[in-house]
Image 1 (tube, rainbow, N blue to C red):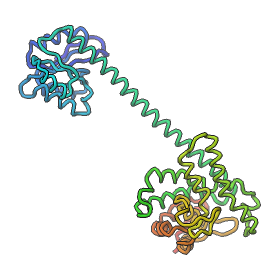
Image 2: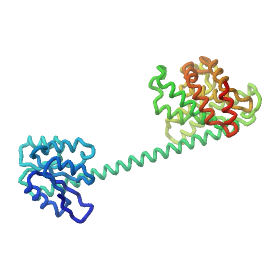
Image 3: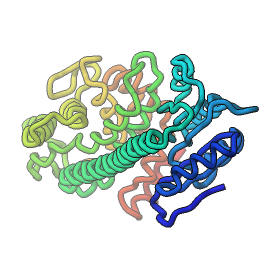
Image 4: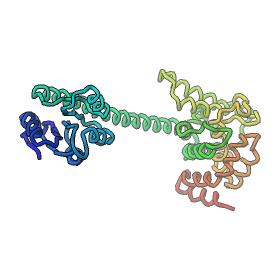
Length: 381
């Protein structure tokens, strides 16, 4: 049974009592202010509450046959769909212990019978106002969470585009490298995923760290924007003096990223990883690399991954100073560099997923023609 008033935005009250006289009394008191639904049993009350149009508040008699008010309230409060609906108990029991039990069951208030009309109306109005405030805050929080998520995704997208744009500045200095930055991104991620459960790196390669590595990897050669064309694009072997200039791309890259951080005025987590990769990816496991001659675990993990990724891609790609090697020859040379150029465990991980590297290389070939030639070359036995 339901009494209706004209306005759609009027709150709905569900009155639950097994006595018809009590239901008539409550309906008479409330119908001028609210839409009223009634139920003469706990089971019927639960069906109404779980309908497509649940009430905004429940007035619930405690003493009812079969399913009493305490049990009905507990069921409502245990269900995520209905726990937000306020319940006010109506009962002839007036002992403080009875009230305690009712409140512990989840009720927001307790009105004793015989019902005082002013008290009933005041309590209903108060708890509907409280619920309206809670609903507003809930909706507002949901909106804010959605907006924060949207803005965060937007910032991340801007970061990603900015990184790729910056990295492409270095890549355009050498038009034969093509999709090198895309391939190295995926190589580094593949190595990180493979090493996730390795005892030496336990707990390091979290999803967050892997995401940072993937985001930062394109900036590994950003310092090459500062290398003169006559050295960067030289088709022959570099002189010792020219090679010293080429080596400065690691320092130039780190310094460029640090300058970006200073302009931002705050440390940026992924730029820390980018600095490690840009500055140290030319270090070698045995200490013979540059710029600092770091050895072993002194080399950042991110740079050790990039060392394998960068060398593999350089070997299989055509450069102004060399033809492209086959995948098999690249794998062989990386194997020879195990424990010398490369961290042994990183080199071993590469060996285990070398076919994944081959697939990445083919997927991100430099151009339509090069993809076909590269695919043919990379699948040679």
